Length: 69
Image (tube, rainbow, N blue to C red; front, side, top):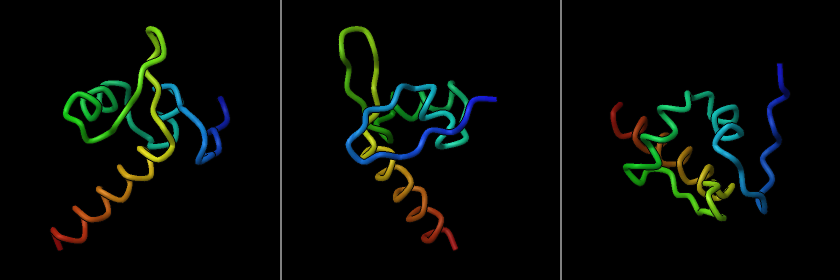
């Protein structure tokens, strides 16, 4: 098993790294990217997710959970 990458605020993560950090499948990650819930950038043909986008997504999930209670 591959170790989970540490979240470094100045890092760009590949989709596979984001999958491990967020415990989500590839399909779910791409769906969240497609709908704009997770931001990304591209470098050539590679899609990269900034650490700030991962933090923002977690915050969004927490806000949604708090508002549904």
